[in-house]
Image (tube, rainbow, N blue to C red; front, side, top):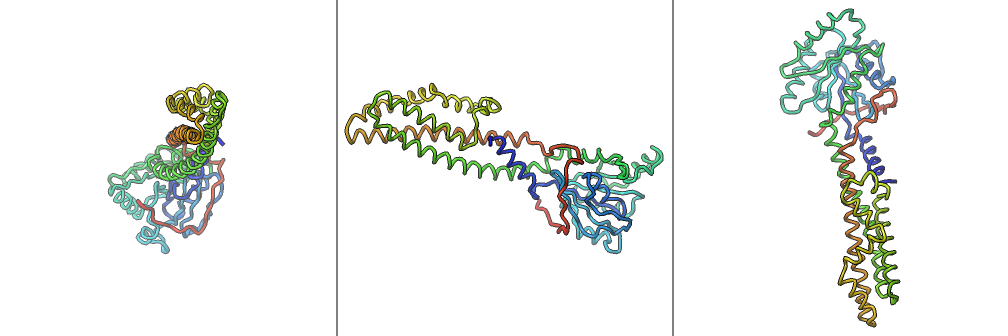
Length: 372
């Protein structure tokens, strides 16, 4: 698995995490067609629909892409007077609000708008989408304009919302609404949640990979230490080159960094060039030469029995350990930079075709209070 693939898998896992979803409340009068709107948006019949105005009695959530769409019961009924409905369902806990209507607006609708506007003024603005269902029943543009004027006149001061005309029976206008909720202009809603979870994953990845790579350094540093007393001049250099080359190669594997990535998609990262150079014989030779006096000292000491050989072995171990830890730090830094770039460029939604995704439907939904 490549480094980039690993990070994308992490992001996909985070994407499936309930806590990072963009939460949409679908609200409105009973019988306005809220459940039908959800079915049309998702492209599958997941929400119950019917002629009874109280068919939905509890909040039911549906997961679709990076969304959690919650079908809330209609208000203004004997079961759910508006005041009790607002207290029970607390729509301010959602990120986006769908207001669905199909007839004339009522006093309860206007009171709901006032509640949303008041909450928005407190600094917690929620995008509002106004969805007029059954638009095929409207015979002229004049009727649509009259509805537009009426609803905007009844919106509370400071409250704004885009108006969409839809008809679930014929799928009219559904694509526009779907594209709106899948639009990444809502990044300010979901991205902080994703970044928070991704940073946690980064830290875990960094810790695990770095620990594994340090074990690799320890193993090869011991081999380099043993080679420090190699009595054959020239052969000891060749052995060092082989040890260093294998150590660097294994460290890259510990971080899931592939050579073709370093020379390809990561070539713009300054560290990529350095990591590639140290994977060549010439690069390792230059590294050994950079040790200068220490390398000479090691070569001389090994011909001195006992104390000198011990010093040569220790010096061989130390030089390899320092070189290995430097390579580990460079790989870890590159991995961190790649992760940051991946989250920066990450696309929230894989496509805009609602019919290609089967949602996860969860019944008996318990409403909860989101932390601000």
